[in-house]
Length: 171
Image 1: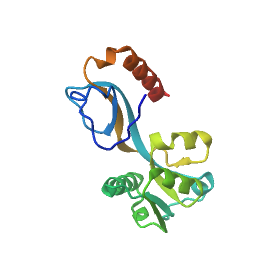
Image 2: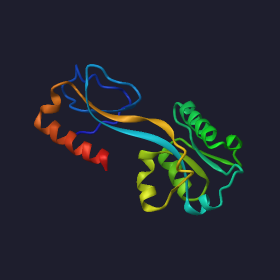
Image 3: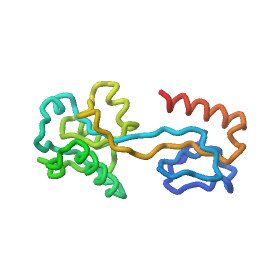
Image 4: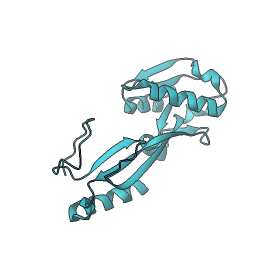
């Protein structure tokens, strides 16, 4: 298996050297076979001690400054509105990171609460290093979709990989 994490999309109908692409988007891909999808949602998480002391006052927040930071800001805004906590948009302190992984590590270290993807935070929640704050409040995210050219899903190595991927997505 060769893994390429380039942000440039591959044309699966033209490039036969690539069997499967996993894309993160809300889009549909007509003309391609969607083999499996892992949906995500966003919630607010923090270290257990941080969550225990969080009330209606705005806590310190850990934020991510992606290339398209509007998406993250819109996520915080949607979560705050759904939670009825508009004051949180003016945090007590803000710690900003360019990578979601670093933001999660900062939240684990108790620097504040983080708005995080259910996919990215799953291992930390399972380990108990992060816990959800108001778990009933979720913001819709996108999805990871495994795609291939039609018919390619029947090729034995591709079929085996997609079968494994489906079981991982279910887990």
